[in-house]
Length: 375
Image 1 (cartoon, rainbow, N blue to C red):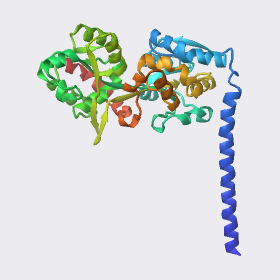
Image 2 (cartoon, one colour; image 1 turned 45 degrees about the vertical axis):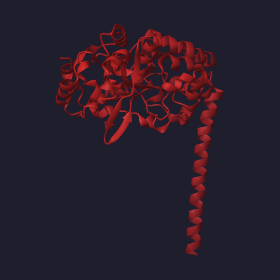
Image 3 (cartoon, rainbow, N blue to C red; image 1 turned 135 degrees about the vertical axis):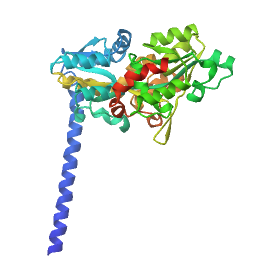
Image 4 (cartoon, rainbow, N blue to C red; image 1 turned 90 degrees about the horizontal axis):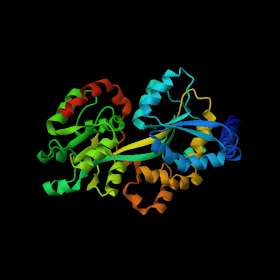
């Protein structure tokens, strides 16, 4: 009798578990269906998007922006900005932000989370998140694209000096390169992204900025520090600089297309016993904490990850040499441009993604001591 009762209870538990799974699956399917069925439920509303430069925003507007506005009836207000500016702006708003969604690289996302300016999305309202590799999923939104960061070098000068490919510090420190190497300044967008990887490149410790940077300065003689991509382009084009460290692959490829004799060098990075090829920088669409348009932002994110939107975003990804976060997106880029294979990131886990939370603990020391590498 007791055995029969035990079996009966187990059967009941399994039945209940099955019901729960069925209900959960049904709810997920309903959410996905609701996104599609009510895609125009916010028609006539306006969403404020804080991107980067006006030029970059224009590429967003011409590609995904047109697709989204036509499909949903939502108008997008494109605001030129930067992650640092957004953090300051949202904090100053005191809980009533005037932007709804923003672009943030992973380094600044960690900073924004620490500063309390990013929200948390409801995954059930972004069913297309399932298309994103698990390692790239975030709580504050979705990845929009991924970039490679490595090194850009003047091929003519390296050939003349018979130098190897500048993948690591053994070539960066070559005597003929003294005074011809450029690093990002703390004011540059690339700095927070690449500083932790530069530290690892000299076997440095996040907790000891002074020692790490003295070690770097003793080996690599810098030309100076760049504040923007424009500085890099000008210095590399003129020939004043022969190597830039922590440079976006897309910027280097753009110079190459302009017939400047440069090429991209993969960045060999070792950290915690693992070897990586390049620094990865996922750019993210992030929900602003306190926005009254949270549901519209989630619709925006879900649409961005849809297979139908993948074709619309091809020009955007080609413009910045960025890898889409979904398989469909990658396939569309490759169909449109077979040469994209040179910069498409097929396996994100093979690239180095710093622990920015750990680095930010020591941020003041790093910004204070950074100028040591330019002396």
